[in-house]
Length: 254
Image 1: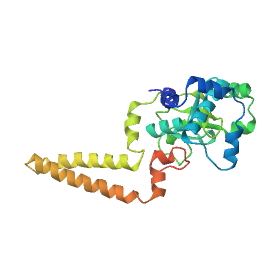
Image 2: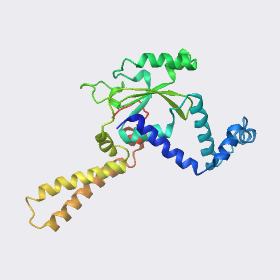
Image 3: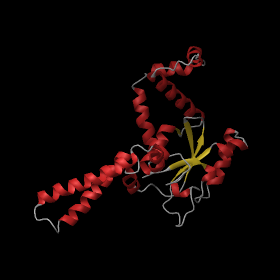
């Protein structure tokens, strides 16, 4: 499973949704318009465009950026989705402490020359998507393995250009193991299932009736899951630290 392919897949799904909003003729007409004075006036007045129009604008912006940067431009929502699914972080490159390959420096140099980037842009606008353990989040006590980082360049607040990918491909087990870390509901379900399985194994030696074992296991697992859920549901700070839907681009670790 390739991280680049996952970004492309997420981008295609969003593009398919956007295609139902505006036709090809509408897209071509919008691309030919150089100014949007009416929309700018609304923006200055604090009147936001409707949802359909915002989606059109985002799509047009991505088409323009793909043309300017020769493809490989992804919306921040696609990046966030992949980070959530595989328990990754997308953080400034200066925080990255994992290994890099031999093609890394030449690609950076070529990218800088092609788009005439300043030294400030090199220092501030490059991001890397990689597992949390590859960043300087805390002192690590074990070696870094199973790496799959991606270097992204920040074009604006919503779009990033994929510059380079190195390391191993994504392990499908990462998707499974990361599912429970996305939000509180998933983790609660995980604890319910695990508690149920352990309880059934223990009760198998103590209870003769299967129905009684199932009922008791459901009650115990439900109680444990509810205790876990109730302990975090009203604590937003703890939720932001624990689950990837909140901390996918944060510098802290749990």
